Image (cartoon, rainbow, N blue to C red):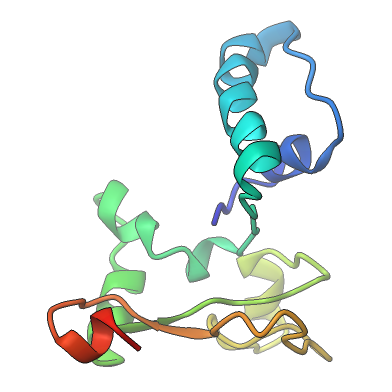
Length: 125
């Protein structure tokens, strides 16, 4: 999962060419690109308010962590093919963890996942 459109776009291309100002980042993305091909790693984009890692890496971004605790330590993977930013979604009155309009889950990827993996049930669904 990433909330960086630039990274998502680069990893969605067939070939990644490291060049320009972001050359170092592109070189690191090459290893992830190789994993995509070898191990069928799926890169998914989510808007910033659906990115739980924000609260873990940014000191002033605690909304996601507080929501995580309010939801009994579960999180929703948001699917939005329009790739609307958190700001645009907020303007529309759309909750942070609601899927985009008309979104379905054709791959049967779980939309809720239990992050707190201490019970045998959570480890062996």
